[in-house]
Length: 175
Length: 450
Ligand SMILES: Cc1cc2nc3c(=O)[nH]c(=O)nc-3n(C[C@H](O)[C@H](O)[C@H](O)COP(=O)(O)O)c2cc1C
Ligand code: SF4
Ligand code: FES
Image 1 (tube, each protein chain N blue to C red):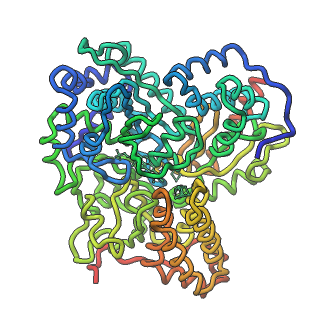
Image 2 (tube, rainbow over the protein chains, first blue to last red; image 1 turned 60 degrees about the horizontal axis):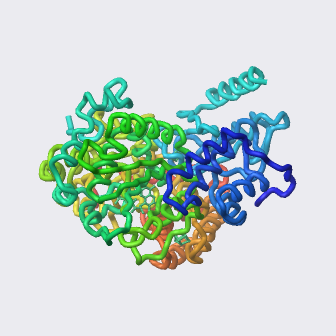
């Protein structure tokens, strides 16, 4: 569902618009709608999620109706429709990973972060959720963190703890 | 040692980079194709090779290429399917990560054969690192004159772009992929028209899997006939197998088609046997969509013949006692794994990933998920098992795209081969709630099949 709570206007920065232009140039004349998914990824990489004003801006930029953006943003699971933690941890929850302990890792994340799937920690640093097979089944359990989709393989409770500690330190370092 | 055609240079340091790849003989196939062969001759080589699509359906690649419509003045497109989302499958990620130029080189050869001047590689959005790797590889190839205008001076132009998806298994289905590439929801199209006639932007389009496209490189280098010498029957060449689950050495292996399944599982050259000294209980041989088989039936066919890694041998016995090679996602279950829990998990996956266009798929997968959840958690009744079979039959064959079948088969096959385990969950409700694994139901891998 789209978030109606956040409707602060959005103004895209020059470098982001530059990326959009580069993307649109990949398709034939009149087919700029093809840029929608890559453009939404760029927007989410900057803002962390897709607000309605941001999607409306994208629609205006591509010359399509806002509904054409909403229907796409709500179809694809990678697009966040509300704010996430600074680090949104996504653990694979599909069969092959469960054979090697993915369910244990998700339980551990829940207790370690103290929030349920889909919720954000009070300090705003973390959120987590289960996602479907990430095409890394031989290295399970696995998790990824956007926007660059950095990948962590062969997870154990200890390696997850270490990762969370490192991310906390990183957050402090970059302020 | 088995012959390798795709992963020959996987261990060469720096093979990700153009210069190293080139030094190892890379881009020779582009030179050979563009300078010495006509597009139709390239198609002929691929036909002779017997290469079958590596994305799951196994359709002969050369034949698919020859179906491409060629109306005057209309652009044609090649789209590479790098959506790789079938649970159990992770070979395309491996290839793109470690030898990206193998895919880029294949894209150039295949685009030339099809007369495409713009081609896209649709990569699942979660593989952002691979998107970056491919973009870098494309820039390098362009720098070296293998992409862009008038490639190698033969007057052929090609632009190659990488398109990220948005996280949707259904976008691996070729027409959903094309919708997605056009910036829409991934709803599969009704066929006909087939993409070969009306695909991307309503233009003739070929969609091929990453591995199929990469395989055209050795086919052009050595000739289709050489390629066809590897393998058995209509299963020619080599195949990347993603091996996961409870194995000692999970990972991606390039095998010669025809390798015995038993050797693949137990030999140290491949998976090295079952992890933690346990025994093999079951295998899903070709990605989550294909029927699961108990240990005895994956190692030997019902006729008692050794089961081989080929399209034909894995399918021997039909759905009664066989399965499919599919995408080559090989998932091994040890003796402690619960088939009911896994079936519930897979069904949850298909329900989650159903695009929702057809009622049998949208509603049926949700219904099966609920019933399986009930059984797995110890609240099922015997009639639920028949209900599952009934619902799965009503989905199968009644939907726009094969996702419906893909959701139905795992349920039907799990019940066919492990019915006693479903029954155990029903008669031992309390215990089923307490443990998250099933009966130690397995056939001794060494015992002959009865
Ligand atoms: C639900 C569904 C998911 C699919 N996912 C993939 C995929 O991730 N990668 C792929 O190459 N083919 C996938 N396919 C098969 C494609 O529709 C298509 O047959 C294939 O890309 C053709 O390439 P090939 O002939 O080289 O195998 C999928 C099919 C279905 C029905
Ligand atoms: S079978 Fe399922 S996924 Fe395929 S088109 Fe129908 S509803 Fe969509
Ligand atoms: S099941 Fe987890 S990566 Fe495939």
